[in-house]
Length: 257
Length: 356
Image: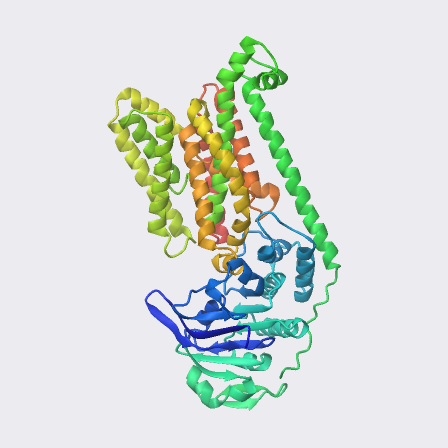
C-alpha cells in the first residue's frame, strides 16, 4: 500500500463540493503531477492531501492512518507542502526563511541543534541557494525565490513533498530548472514528490506518474507515455491536438491542431 | 523514468555549513547585544525617572531606597511614595504596549495594525470613561471594564473584517472606523458628564503614567509576569504564522489556535496598560518596528519590542514632565512624536506596494 492515498475523498469550499468521491494513490518514491484545466479541482486535491482542507467525506490516509486524526506536528515531519503563494515577511533573509522549515522538529523549549544545522545546510546546497544566505528574499529573482522556498520545504526533511503550482510565475528556463531540481531531489533521496502543474508538456517530460483531472474527477492516471493521448487532452482541456514524441526525451508532446 | 535530466548545477561555491554557522552566530550576537543594551537603557531611564524633580536625588540613593537598603525618611518618602509609582507605571505600561503592539502588527501582517490604531484602545477607553463618568467608579472596576471594551472592539473587528482574511487596507479601514465610532461615543458620554468628572475623564483620555493607583499597578504587573512569558513562548508559532496560514499549517502549527492565543494575550496586555495609564498613543505603533530595526528584518522579537516600549514611554514621560516648560500628560509627547512617524509609515508602505 502506498504511504499517501485517499478513499472516497470529498472536498469543497463553503456550499459546494469541488472534488467528490476520489480514490487517489500517490506512488511512493516517484514524482507525480496533477494536471487539468483551470478550476478542475487539482489544487483542491493537493490541499486536501496536505491537510489544509478537512474532508467533507472519505479520508486521506498517511501511512495507513487517517490524516485528520494525526497530530499536526507529526504530520509536518512526514509531509511537506510548498503553498501556491507563501508569504515572505518583510526583509526576511534566505538563511532565516530556510531555517524556519525546521519548525516541526523543534519544540517549545528545544530551539536549534546540530540536526537543524545540517538539514538547513543540505537544503541550501541542494537548491543552489547557499550563496544567497544573507540576501533578503525581496531582492531575488523569481527563479531564485522559488528555489529558496523549495529549500525551506527541504529543510523540513519530509519523505513526501507536495508543491502547488510551483512554476506559475517562472519563465520557461526557470520552470525547467525547477522541475530538474525536483527530479534530482527525487533521484538522490527517494523523496515522493507531488506537484500541481499547468504545462502538460513539461509534466510529461519530467514526471513518472500523471493524474489528469476534469471537473473534480480523475480522468486518467499512470505514466505519461501510457495515458497521454489526443483523446485525453481533448477530454481534459477541450483542446484538439496531436500528440507526438518529444524529439529529445521521446515523451508525449502536445501540439495544438 | 523518461527524462534525460541533465543535472542542475547545485554545487555550492562556499562552504555552506560554515557560512550558515557564521550567519547564525552573527544573529545571536546581535540579538544578545540589542536585548542587553535595551535592558540597560530601560533600567537607566527607570532610575532617572526617580532621580529628578524639584528635589534631586542621586542614582545610588534612589536604588538604595527602592531596595530598602537605606534609612532616610525624606528620600524614602519622595522615592517610594511619589516617584516609584510613576516609574513603575511607565515601565509596566511601556512593556505591555510594546509587546501588545508588535503582536498585533505581526499577526495582522500590517505595520499600521497596532491596537491604538484599529480601535482596541478606543474600545477600552470608552469603557473606562463610562466607568469614571457614569458609574463614578475607579480602580479594578475601570480595569475590568477597559478589558471588556478592548475585547468588544476586537470582536467587532473580527466580525466585520476577518472573514476574507486580514490582508490589505480593508482591515485597517474597518479598524479606523471602529476607533472613530468609539471615539464618538466617548464624546457623547463626556458631553453628559459633570464638569469635574469630564475634566478627570479628559485627563485620563490623554494618557499619563503619573495617575496609576496601587491596585491598578499591581494588576498590571501580575498580568505582565504571567503574560510576557506566555508571549515569549508564543513567539515560536508567530514565526510560522509569519509565512502565511498555509505554510504555517504545513509546518505543524495550529494556525487558528495560535492566532487566538496571540491576540488574546495582546488584548489583555493592552487593556491592562490602558486601564493604568489611559490610552497613550503611538507607543504600541512604534515599538515593534524600532525593535525590528535593531534586531534585523523579520525578527519580530516580542521582548525587544516590550523593552523599546518601556524605554519610549519612560523617555516620553521624562520629557513631558521635566523638559517641557509646562508639565504635560505623557500622551501629548508620544502623540507629538508619533504623528510624523505615522505619516512617514503611510507614505512608505504605499510606495512599497505593501499596503494591499
